[in-house]
Amino acid sequence: MRMQELNRWQHATRIIIIMTTSDPTGGDKVVYFGVININENGRTMGSVDIWRSLLTKEMFCEEKRLGILEIVDYLGMPKIDKDKKWAVAINRSFKGHQRWRLIKMIKEGKMTFTDADDNAVEVNVKDFKIVDPEWWSFLVEENVNRNIEVTDAPTKNDTR
Image (cartoon, rainbow, N blue to C red):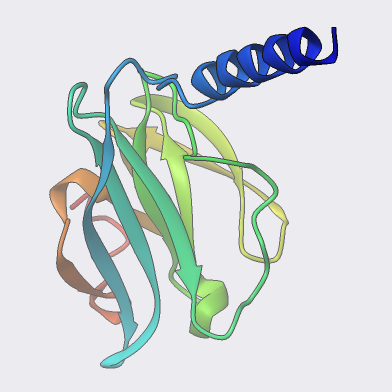
């Protein structure tokens, strides 16, 4: 009788292992796609790491700030709604790593995000670009594997 119990246990263990190792993405793989270096006066102050799904071509992004070692409060790849795009918002007057933030940009209207100090910021957006005297932005998808110099900000009236 003990041998029969052992056989059932081994069979149950095998089933659990097979179930836990199945691929929940349906065969899709997410691979490293590139980086955007955020520079101020020629010195890197952070970066945006970009991954992309092989099947859906969906992008996933994560900001990295030089000298900041905090762990993010989510597991896995960060998600974004289909009607939004990854962008970097940059403050015209701040200096250093507190100057920029990775955001989920809407196409048009008013949007609110938090700056690097966790303060709420409300800006106007037109065609996925911030139109504001204090902030400017660029889309991640248009700048993969580039260095962005934040001191080369467009003028306050320019919607670059």
